[in-house]
Length: 357
Image (cartoon, rainbow, N blue to C red; front, side, top):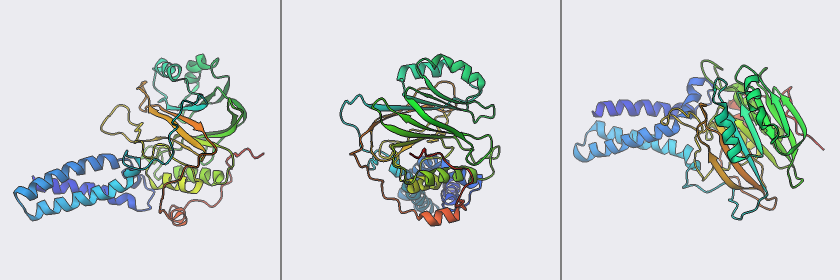
């Protein structure tokens, strides 16, 4: 039994150490996704190892104990900021102000035929901004019943699972659909005006994931994140970035995005909000994200009910409080080293719209 335990912990240790490298190969980067699962299995391994050391001390039981502790320490370091034990990066809104912004992001799964379930979710939660991903012409037609409630819209239907649609109750003053890194993988960028007359920017992305069926490496995904981060670094307007990043919240590339842009993650200190995979409770991680600039507080974050997709929808409600200066939690990442090691481009021929005044 101890031999089996040591073998299992050895595999988990390899999966723990591999992502520490800067390799962008999909096999390496996929280990970022399973940190929670590795942590839970290692925790079970630790309990078994403690039992073994207590009742039958041996080299194998001690080795298993040490390996489990090392795995838990490393994995815990990555996932801790998203637990309830950590400090909140974004303050909570403690009053009942009606002046909030509700953003709902939903990767619909293009082949999902349960359109009505998503429509019911939208009608129930009434987001001000609705971002749908993997939407094609069929989904556009099915969601046409929302058009009266959302007079401002940006459509980019595609049949390659990278279509995007944006539905807004707020006036969209400027809009642009871009292909920042790869052809046929769009992103939507808007300048909109809230009900209070405040101009804000929204940037909605869905880069390709590193996988054997998509991209051999994470470079296209990482490049899109860093291009966006650099473009928004010194932005003066309140800004929101949302979408399916095909990356987990604690990965090096997502942390690098936040470090460069200075944006905040309202999930920190509040929970993981795992949005994928909706069909397998034991294999879930946070793939759908929302980041924002300073000057917001959080009223509500919720992972919504199932609607037939392999993703859950994410609903985030923010309150604009320009006097509120949230603090980005300390991150000792060396930005220049990370950019160099990941071989991120210094410049891009495709520019992110920032809607300069």
